[in-house]
Length: 134
Image 1 (cartoon, rainbow, N blue to C red):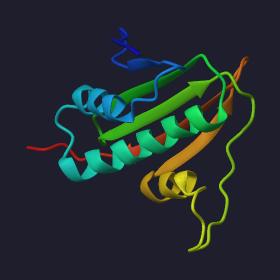
Image 2 (cartoon, rainbow, N blue to C red; image 1 turned 120 degrees about the vertical axis):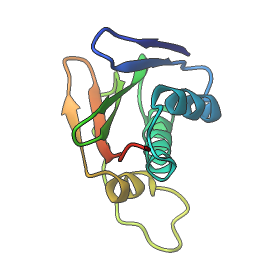
Image 3 (cartoon, rainbow, N blue to C red; image 1 turned 180 degrees about the vertical axis):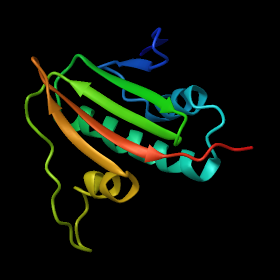
Image 4 (cartoon, rainbow, N blue to C red; image 1 turned 45 degrees about the vertical axis):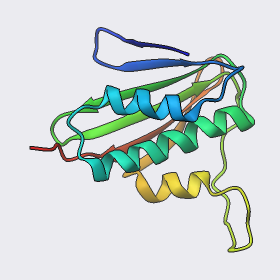
């Protein structure tokens, strides 16, 4: 995994196809978002975990995670890009379902989310409100 910050203040983490270390990705996310209140940071971390897990379960590499925090109103934009053209599908789940809850969680925690088709692959994005700590 290679993390960098671009000149427009977006934080970018290249995802390594051979190593699914979600703990490391969550620590990187937390470090990239100083000042976000712990309650909202938990929501951001859950959304990041679900979207990145979907990449490892269903997508094609190369893949990357992008984070951007806007100030007014404070919102974290999470985008996971990968090389697969297949769109994720929000599926109904039952109490007996063992899997397929990822997008249900994203749908509940994000103010908005969606998919943008790219020339190669797609970007799955979510907006999570994040009041700043004082």
